[in-house]
Length: 366
Image (cartoon, rainbow, N blue to C red; front, side):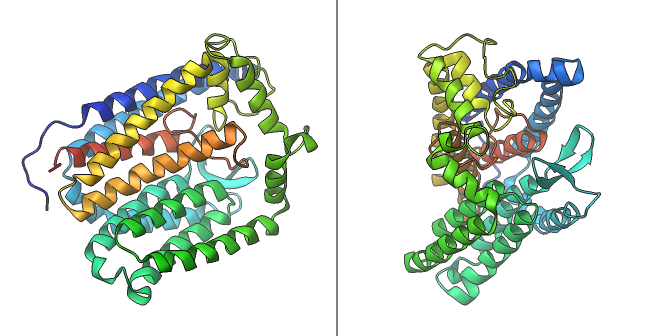
């Protein structure tokens, strides 16, 4: 267990997180005001909900920051059971809410939760506990890799039934990073990588819309009004932004050209309004956050803390790379939100909760 003596939390991590949160709130309003006014007669519709979840997330972040992270181990099993139940419940027709072709939400009206988001953090807690307790077995297949990856693949399968390839991929990549840090052998990863690549190709081929996303990523102008529409509109937003942008609130693409500009493609609107300078500042904040997170993982007082911090910072880094890669046309559309900036209650609350865990570990650093 870590020492009971606590120091001040990582100030740079707090500063980067707060900066991203404030920018996110401003950009959610700017990107959604036109759509909200048209659909709900309230330009603040999305902002008010984002503010609610931001406030909730900050409260939970402060709570997690001051609750000894070693005690998280007691919550692991109940949390995993609840998350698996939610993943099953959301698949029930009439219970799970369908949005964007995926049955991924539970709730009523505008207030809903996304169980797959909760599973991402639950899996990190589980793997940190299991791998720290069973590290001596991690170099073996039967007692090391099979139990850990087996549970990950079951969760991935349930998420894919929604279907939600993006969230599932983030969870799998984060889990693999944690298993690697725990000491798994490289040769096992080579085999698993080849199997995973074959499975990924199978998932793409099995669903025509996924194959369309791949082809539209390679040449979006081959179907400009269909599968390539989002990428093209995103690039039309980024291009005119130039170095300084068109000005805050002056985006053109948010006028019903770019679909859902306040969620997955919010970075495109930010780049259009605040230009290269604004985008570079956001990326700098993420770089600081990732740097401090890696430092916390490196100097954590025990293996459990190291794995917990590694999982959290890995999850954030993977989401940032995928989201921005999609927005600038380097990756196929996946439906991944940009941490702290995109509109979404489940994502924002859990990201702030995760930062609370990092801040807690930072108070026990060696």
